[in-house]
Length: 98
Image 1 (cartoon, rainbow, N blue to C red):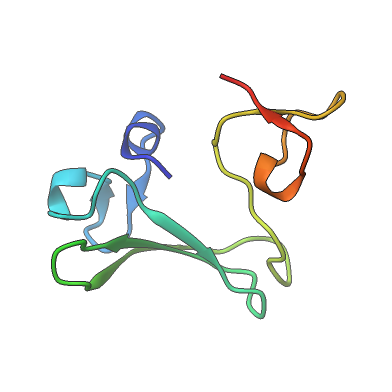
Image 2: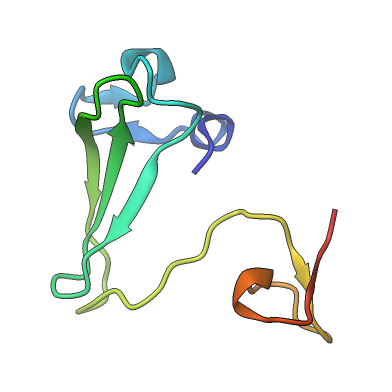
């Protein structure tokens, strides 16, 4: 998830007990990785350090679901008939909107 989106939405950094500040995670690139755990239904938010290969747990999000099967992001919309929500990579023949 891009930093600009997380900052704009006031994302909370559980590890620091404050709002997410991208500068707190040097060399993490320009966003965080959201990882859903099928067994628990929790989503772990991780900053990946591109220099040394380390990872920092930024937050863990509990969901009301008993498991996580899929997730959506704010990627470019896809046009496929009347549907504009699924990544084009998983739907051959669909085109990515700009």
